[in-house]
Length: 358
Image (cartoon, rainbow, N blue to C red):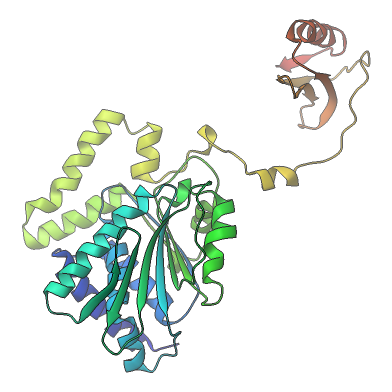
């Protein structure tokens, strides 16, 4: 590991460069994103970093700025500080649909062209809609790629040192685990999961829930407003209050109790309206139960659940006691609902003395 002093020097350089290329002054939460990624890369941590920032708060400047800074300075700084590194440094932007990581990718292209305009020694070997290959004189090539992580997309196998997963709440875990993260195996790559909150359990939420404070950055809209108001009080520039004005309008339009407002701005996960449990977690709850014989009478209070089947599924009636233990289970094959309803009605009337709810 390099020293904290060296990390601080690298971060100062990164902030200066990104502010010049973006032509904006970074907010503190943007600097935190930039600095955390730098530390993980230059210390070769192989970290999984989870970043959740309220919509339209400027996380793109921090994320793309990080990629551009590393593209321009990584090998030069490794040489300066005696950091052992691979002979390649490649980055990949992924999203559930190709147009989602493309926003970041196009911003990277914009900043790199601006760096070239400012006279930095940058030459592009490839510069198209999916790949940028950068040649800095005397340094190895650096490649930045933009790829779809949709369930049907064929992700080309590449060796990556830094992986950005945009809209990570919508990317299928199977794709992340089996196609994307393995690209960083030989390099001990750092992965950056980025997005607001969502409606289903996923790897992104797991890292937000379980990671150390260092490896997760969560900035809901209230914190964005607070930081921008702080900068306004220092600078007197009222444009820093625009976000607060926008959020006041959005809160009235959607209502703070609306799920979209909760997930996109407050960064609260709303699992009850999406996937409450993953398939893997569901299997952990599996146990054997005997399907009951009709005509057996239960005297204690029960609650009953009915799951209607379709042509190729079963209709299942389950009864649980007040401790939520399954005490009876009945099954019907097929979709003859008329006969199933009659039989279910008879069972509820004859087999249970006290039904609390169905």
